[in-house]
Each structure stands twice: as C-alpha cells, then as structure tokens.
Image (cartoon, rainbow, N blue to C red):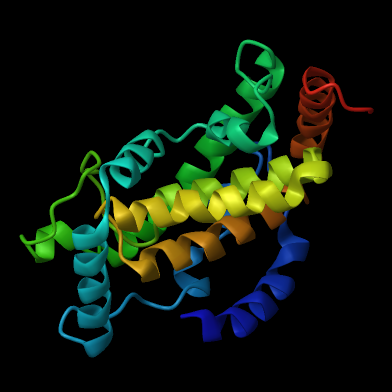
Length: 232
C-alpha cells in the first residue's frame, strides 16, 4: 500500500482548496473528505496479500510478551494524553482543560469523517476471519478498514507536533508505536493501519485549512506550551 502514497498525496493537493469552515459544528464537514475516493480498497479476503497480513498477525501474536500486551492494552484508549510519555508529564487534562476540549473536538471530527469509510468497505476484523487470532485488547464493534486508532494517532501527532515542534521526532515515533499496537493487539491488519495513517494525514491537512480550527488551535497551543514551560 505504501507505493500508492504518491498518487494519494497528489489527489489530496487537488482537493485541499475546498477545505474550510462550512457552518457546521465540525471544523471540517464530512462531505469535504471522501476517503472512499482517496484510499485504495483493502486486500480481498481470498487474496495472497490478505494471507500475508494474517500470517504477520499470527507471528506478532506468537511473539508478543506480557509487557507488549500491557502497552497495547493501554494504547487502546484513544486519548491525546497517551503522548504525555514523550511530551512531558505536565501534559494532562487537568493542566490543559482548554486543549483537552479542543483535542476532543478534533477526535470527534475525525470519527465523523472516518465512519463513512469504515461503512463503505466494511472489512471484517482479523479475529472474525480467523479464530486463531486472539486479541489482547478489547474487540471493537465496527469495521476494520481504515483503522480508527491509527487515524486518531496520526491526526493527534500532527497537531501536537505543530504545537510542540521541540518534541516533533519523539511525537511521531510515539504515534508509530501507537499504530503498531493495533496490530500487536490483534484487532487490525497492517493495511488497516497504513490506511489510517493516510486518512489521518488528509484529515489533519484539511483541519489546518479551517479558520475555526486555527482559532481554537492557537488557544490550545498557548495553554499546552505554558503547561510544559515552553516559550510562546
């Protein structure tokens, strides 16, 4: 799927001028991003690609340790404050209430856009296709493709890395581990996770074109940087 990223990003550049506030409660309206047009379909259930992904998940399941399982279970929580381990221990909801509300709104906006794509492809979860896959994290009740957690981690990491560029490398590395934990957890295929990374990149790009988002982002950024003891 990675070889498709170049054409995917070219299409994104064509669509970006359409982004902006639409008068809805969302920063970016659902209609502005049609992920079914942008993403390739997931591997067919009877394809060699599908089998390769299933084999990889079986290997991860065999090799995962109790510590890896605990980490994947903790990352099942979709909270931007999972990034506190690299951003700083003062990055908490109690210390940044304005930013916490802002990040919740961003998450809900992403969910509204992603939900349509999940329904479009309706890909079964790995454990639904292969009973030998036993997740160590809670089983989600929706479709597998694209990964919502991967999308979430990507959007949050892009927004957070722009707020705290001093920690950009660490934030993006943490997002990569967050995404991988969905495979380790046994609830997503690698192609789900990659599609989530692409989806999150698109959503973040559109968000940064929204005047309303930028207004709220500036307030959240100032609060986060103050909590971390960083200059404005």
